[in-house]
Length: 604
Image (tube, rainbow, N blue to C red; front, side):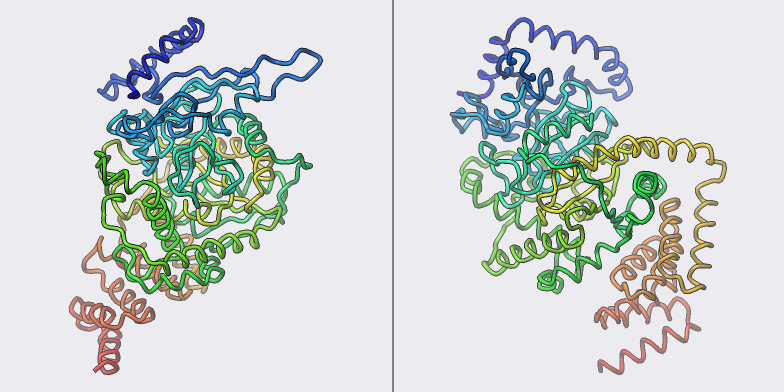
């Protein structure tokens, strides 16, 4: 039976009352939709394109008083279209899947548990093809409209589930998070998203993507609902609510962000100080911590990954996550893919259709990385610690744009997402309002198995997060007298002063602030590279110099500094080329000439 006839049948069988709800919702939204349509010059569906099929899976009748009602009574929810529903064919994000598969014989335990707890399931929602992308785009069922920024992607893979919550069609929804499938759309749509510890919620009755990474996650706008749903799904024993003993800010991750620190990490810092006091805060360079605690990464650092000679520990983790996902997806679905040859969205086909060979050694090594990564985070956070990172580095890309297909974009996004995916730790995405018209969010991570504690921490901190985010937003707009360029120059001068005082990390912070305010100034990157050199962070120094050279082909200092970084990394031939080019640009540059000569003699 194909999914089309199924869908029309189920709509016909709905009760008139249920159908009326949808009509009322549609009318209620019509004014807003008309305005959006005029602005966007494209039609936005009544349900924002979130749903594939409307259902009505009703809870059992409530118990008679004095017994307490079911814990989720009167809440509605939607499910991403890869959960089994008895008698229904999931599309797995592709019509060919529905055409070639039989209806499910039973309902996924995650879904039935929520219904037994009093919630009503009203529909299935759009996902990326085979829940494989992070854009949320689907050319077969249409891309759901992001209610927060309609011209931008909603994020994926569980795009429809996030949009259904963000547009107020349901109280909560279920998605699957493999490599960001819940966290990314929550961040892009400005709502809460929870990825539980790997294995904490049953995978039975969901179509597998990558079994060692897949988790059943959920979305909500209200932190209390997110928590109540969590308690049902996690079936965690009741424990006294505990406050975090340590909140660890990953400073290096926030420095990559396209949002000023006072609108991201500073919001968390101020909220923490107010609630728990300064003594709870700790700052960390997460890249360095992972490099030292996950020794199996060294096996990858000499390989060419995505065309880069060497990579940061987080980029390596992202590559391992992609490798694992592709390997496990292939084990389950490659045979079907080769028979059916489904037509895919470019963002998905790029990852699924290239030739993929894998050795036993690589599989074993990726398992070691996962084990070490979990141990590293568990030892950093223990039972009552929280790690704070940005959810994603960049704002949501344009709908239909090329940005989300680029290797650079994927690498930047997946680096942060790989932290919880590879370690199996739990993570919650929290919205912090808007900056520059785009939603801003941060994520809190707790140790594997710390799901209940993470939900409690969210409950304790959510309101003060929102208050601090509002204060930061309003104080920023009132101080906008100084232009961005002027502010960037002030930050650079502060960086120069800190550098003179040999405060390298502080200098990097100021240069980073300057770059955020004015990202096309080569000097800021070149100066930050010099500070990175002093710290021995040669990879970051090399990357900054390359960026500076891209912006200003005649930046002598950038060539000299990149040569120095490359020499330290052992790329002697490239280092000689950089020193020589610095001399070409500035024949009087003795240091560059001497460095080139010294290296040349060494390698004659």
